[in-house]
Image (cartoon, rainbow, N blue to C red; front, side):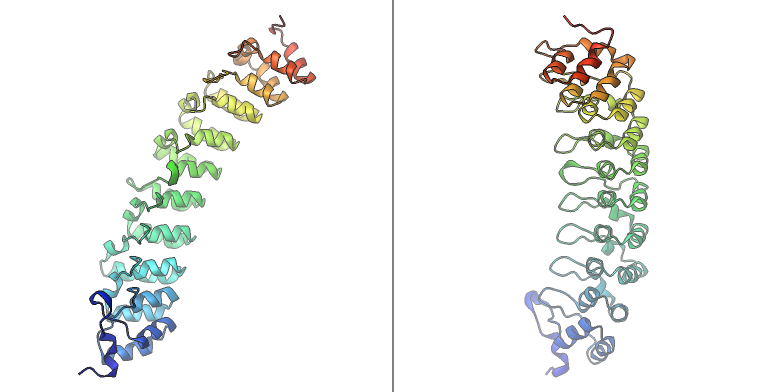
Length: 358
């Protein structure tokens, strides 16, 4: 008959050994001495809580490094145990914010050849690299990438790849390391990708690296139809715009789904510097909307009351032909300038030698 010291062998749900309360307390407090005494009297320390946590899970959650290393030395199979959230002890340590402990456990997995266990994902499809990056543990993330490059290929249930998470947090060092892995995933939620994340952070250096290794990402659209270039233009990120066009000038000729070419988007914001970069790389970039009322960028600049942009158009040789272009209603830019009652705008147009006032 079992004595009082063997209560850790009581059966829990689904045939699992229920953890002794004393072992649970030792794991929670990090009392490795008590744990080793119990193990010496009863070698089996594989019991779990009702949430399927082992004593290694519990100690990992509380960050007890000594307890973790000593219990692994006694029973290394605990490294591959998973709880109801499908967490390994390594995942539990990372998710609880104990990066140093996670690094120690990582060495335990590597020393025992448990590389596949490092790759396991939790109930949300996140692996340890997802959580390390999300929590800002950059040094740990780099160690994980070195130990198990395949971590970079996983996408969680939110459609987030480790590379996308790193780019969103502007972790350039991690993003560039992941770009070195040929089959690393790059997608994010709602159709976004890593390049879009770099654009949002105005990270022209990372955008350049992405364009050098995965230029096709510049042509992908998200669920709203936005491309990296359209987002860069909208956010007035001139450095990123320049990088994208330097690597692929054809991007400047694509008219977005809303029908407004990039030059018209620049006019809407009054961004002369963006227009100059566009025209430098794409001298004949589209200037007229493909949808009703088929305005030119000159119409748009007047509608948005950007006098300086209008003056820029008037002095730019390749845009001279816009001065008398009409929209679907037969109205030129001058019509709208007069309607806006802006004397400076009207004066600028009338000063152009090609203006048609009839």
